[in-house]
Structure formats: structure tokens, C-alpha cells
Length: 287
Image (tube, rainbow, N blue to C red; front, top):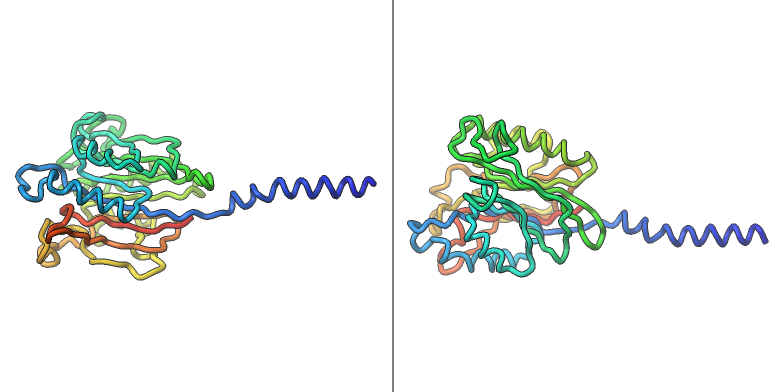
């Protein structure tokens, strides 16, 4: 009788632990993207934001981005993106830490993910407040979020940013700072994604600094990368490959805890017009 009782208790314990083991081992897949929206500039005429916002919204929703980072979004553009009902976001304007200036915000599907914590830091020697760093021409910011998948409980971090377009030292130091912040915020076992417009191509030292610790998603995609090598189009629909010299300047980086199933530079257009002067970079990730 004692042996039967022991076996019964043992089986009940296994049954209790088995679902928990499955819960811990289950992997998730998600669509992640980075998208420089081009700020709302009236002098862009037909390419000004009011003529593009619906195209941007439609692109995001059609491709079913689960999480995406934006760059150059002003407060009015942020309000337009808030019209998409599936998404919530974190981020602040870089000029004042509120709604002034460009955002490097992170949007996430609030049906799928729970926000656990988030924050912002400035790419400068005084990261806790709005400030210009080193030889940068503009104030620059990085927004981060820790998200949890509601089905599996798995957590991951995302860091989204926009490096300076003029200051080489600023870009190099910004890359180092983001890697330092990631080490401070997350463990070595945590999946981490970095997205943004880095104003740096793969030949630069800023890119080289990041790929010492992170992987360029394009280079480790398990399927053939899709789309052009350039991520900046300058609204030149017919000849963007001729005017773009930088090649890739918008990137998605991942650490060793993440698999890249697919990588794409999306060239969606409407009526011979692009939704932005940058192409979105989108990936299917698994961890």
C-alpha cells in the first residue's frame, strides 16, 4: 500500500510539472521591424506626411509587425500611428523628454505582449537628460522596452535608436553606450533586439562595434534575404539605386539567444511613391 501511495503521489507530481516544463520550453516567433518614417516636413510637398500616413499605417498592418521601432516621428505623427488599434507604444520626444522633437519610439501589439518596463536614455555623456553628445549635430535618444509574450511568458528586450548623421565620434560612442546599457539591464540569457537608423553602413566603426557583440540579422537569416541592399531611397522611385551611396544604414541586430528566420527590406509603394524616404527592415525572429 505504501508503494502504491508513493507511486500515485509521484505521478501526480509529474503531471503538475509537465505543463510547466512545456511552458518553459516553447519557442515564440514574431515579426520585428525598424522604420524611419521621415519627419513631417511641409517642403516635402507630395511626399509630406499627410500624403503618406495612410500608406505607412497600411504597410505596418498588412505585414503584421508585432513589434517595431520608428525614427524621426514627431508628436503629430505619433498620434497618427496611435490610430492603429492593435498597438501601444513607449518613447518620448528627444528634445525635452516629453513630446518635443523626434521620437525613437517602440510600438508593440498589445494583444500579444505585456509591457514589463521601459525607459529612455540620451546618447551623450549625460544620458539621463536631453543632451547633445560629443560631435553630434543633434540631440539623440534611445528608447528601450522589456516585453513579455502573453502566451508563453517569455521576455525580451528591444532597444531602438537613431544615430547622428554628422558626428562620427558620436556614432561610435553611441554604439558603445547602447551595448553597456544592454549589459546593465539584461542577463546573458535574455533575448535582445537592437533596431534603428544608424547612419552607418557595414564599413563603419560604429557598425563594427555593435557586431562584436550582436549579429546583423541579414547575415544570419535562415532564408535568403529579400529586397535591395539599400535602405534609403530619398523618395526617388525610379532611380533610388543610383542616388543611394550608403547602402544599408537601417539595421536589426540580435544577440545569440535569437534565430533569424527571414530578413527583408520592404519596397512597398503606391502610385509610384514610397511611404517614406527609408525602406522598413523587417524580420521573422524566433527564440
